[in-house]
Image (cartoon, rainbow, N blue to C red; front, top):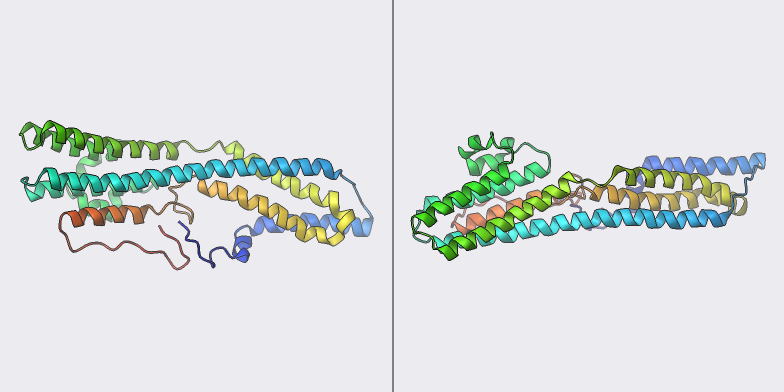
Length: 300
């Protein structure tokens, strides 16, 4: 996730990000001006129809970006809920099972930590079995996960099974077991929401149509205004069309909030935060470091 620093939002850096689009719109406007200046070629396109196209384009591009941001923000809320549910699960384990062996409490919480890191890997299309954080907390249980189609669900099921056994032996009463069940259900709902966002991309026609309309607008605008403002159409065309392009590209990068791009959610930071909180519940002092922003101001 990109942090709001002045360096990140430098206009020059934004132009470098879309240098191909800048070049395209500049070349088109320059060609229109050269034809008008040397060949006296003036197509005199009606500016009113172009204004309507520009207004419609702005609404269309903004709608796509707003939809993408809603997906991004929903994903952030889901992971915020996962942080809170994991902390509450740790509170339940330590409060409801004070007489249980410490190894059992540690097993439950480390399994939850492993679940969080596994979910992070799955959402980022990474191999959880090759992840150091997953291996460190799951240990030998990692072998049993390799045959699971949904390893995250399997980890939750294992924790539920362990709690059910405690209920059968009388170490948990019915109310406490119901409370644990509610917490695990909330965690599973978070996973389901993240999987829905991950596996349901926005229709690709949205992005393709928006890109083509911006390109058409960038070609027609110089032909419509070059006879009125001359060479000044070049910077104006670049500025207006790049503004549309930036908004459109912002929607594209926000569409998948779990990606490793600079606008993706900081899943590693959130996962490590949960890990540290749960290890502290166990009284551990050798805690891993929560990653800070990289030099460009990006949290992963």
